[in-house]
Amino acid sequence: MTALWTYLHDHWSQIGDWTLTTLWLAALPVGASLLAALPCGWLAHRYRWARLPFVSGMGVVYTVPSIVMFLVLPEVLGTKILDPINVVVALTLYSFALLVRTVADALDSVPTTLLETAGAMGQTGWQRLLRVHLPLAIPVIGAGVRVAAVSNVSLVSVASVIGTSQLGQLFITGNNISSLTPVVLGLVFFIGIALAFDLVIVVLTRLLSPWERAVAR
Image: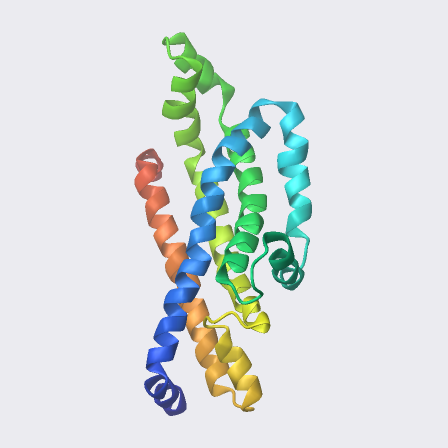
């Protein structure tokens, strides 16, 4: 434990910068992919023809190894290998592949009787979607976002292999100097970030679905 505190104290400035970079590299793709997954997931739920490209097709993307994605994207985007944008795009694709299926399944899970009741009360299709359908799907969508966020935190560390500066560099450093201290410190930081992301998403999901708390009581 003393070695960890000593290493952290001696390299605090660099580790602080790496932590901030890791946070936005993991968080930005989740937000961007969720914004894209909501309309695409609705299309996959609403129209059978859209389910194959958005759900099954994007599922194939998730099977591509992350290191391959990080190496191929610079050629596709015309960026440099160390450019963080490569990591953001790669993780956005992975998150979208997860979330578009989650959104479609979440909308599928809402009982049609509730939607029919809302329609009988005079609500239009868009009103039912925004006031009934989507709100009731939030808990399931939130669960998918939690998985995507935690997965992103883990995948960010892989980008250290190609030299992207973030907390994953602690693993590379530990290997280079044959010391477990930076490796253990890196694990602690990554686990802490993953837990923090998960907690934030759980809180937001509960705030956006107050009826779930009422049912729990």
